[in-house]
Length: 119
Ligand code: SF4
Ligand code: SF4
Image (tube, rainbow, N blue to C red):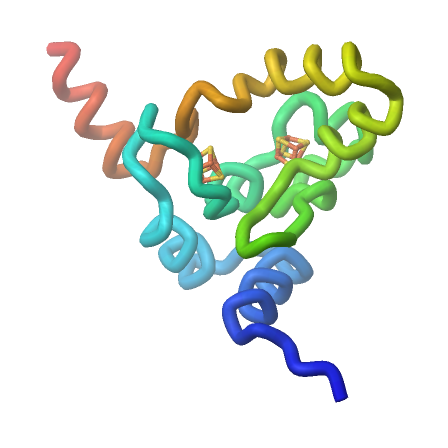
């Protein structure tokens, strides 16, 4: 019998269906602050599909179909594809997606705080 990790099941279910307000809130809870190290919470790609995802699967509706869950976190499946193509392709896509530069996704609350600080 296969036993599934409860969190893994929960995360996989979130990716399979359209993101509900409750899902977004659950992923946002795990998200570190903007620019802090990425923890693979998946909030970004479950909330909107990036340019790379749009080009690869053409589906504008989040969650992105290329989200992959393994080792207790989400990964970008486009990186897996690029890595299979070669080291340079994998590196180039990591740079394009700013992987390794911290969390680049903001919750509505973070956005509001940053916008207010500009005034
Ligand atoms: S970049 Fe995405 S997966 Fe990484 S911490 Fe931010 S919201 Fe989560
Ligand atoms: S292509 Fe990768 S980085 Fe872009 S939305 Fe999809 S999973 Fe996220």
